[in-house]
View 1 (cartoon, rainbow, N blue to C red):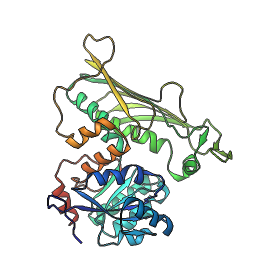
View 2 (cartoon, rainbow, N blue to C red):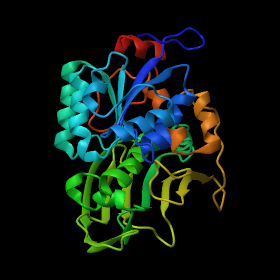
View 3 (cartoon, rainbow, N blue to C red):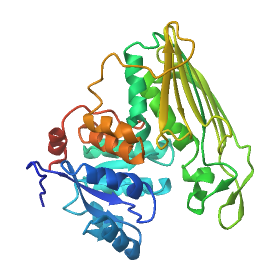
View 4 (cartoon, rainbow, N blue to C red):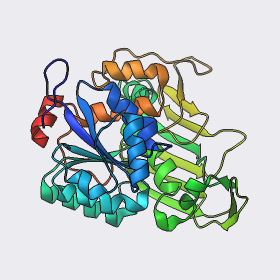
Length: 368
């Protein structure tokens, strides 16, 4: 089966595992994003774990082919790329099935439950010679791209230090029933891997990788309450993470993430340099979700204002500029998919690499 867009080009056919019709990343971000990119992508199949929810998702999202198991989806002849949008404990099994079927893969972050699973998937993608990407939405947020360009253009001069303080938003005194699994570290969906992981990727995207570090984690809350039921359960995940170190360029690094929601600052990322300072703030510490504000100052400025670019980076597409007007999960998913369509490298254990090649090259890579 071959589908074409309005301009006659072939479209990349996407099958989504975990298309819960009621909530989740597929419904909130990926499906709206892919539908807005209809010249390049088409959602051709969905799957959930139950027939009833599969049929409901098919009707709600207007996708005719719906399965109640992942194996039929990954083996479907009408699917070029498999997107995995389920809970972390299931990533290894589902991603392995997609790669074994020879399909290109887009997997939500964290890629696996721990480093070992991520390395296993990376090795399998390399062995199969297929394209695989781990989705880290924070680096696709327009404010983060803005900070990246400002630093590259020398707004702060030589970077001296960077400090990141954030709230996990979860891992606090209460939790919704469907997120209770995140409070047990054995499931791999911790504050370290999710909230801090997304923010740290954005930081490294702008400033470079970490050269050396030391870190401390501790679990200060001993229990939590499940919203709605009032059930009290034992906490089994660290809710305080502290990191200090040096970046590749020698700049000092400091990170502190804490569970729950602060009555004060929930996201503050400040970068100080020889010529200026940049500050990125948000109402929540999950940088892949919340809208962010950029402020800066240089030279004789005594307080930060909205900084100006001397030129616009060609790495930011027109679609991403439009998305800057509504920096939401949907817009960041759009940016992730538009960037991923040109990527040609196997999955990275650390993070996906920003692609610059064209959509046609990607279609050639996956053989559509």
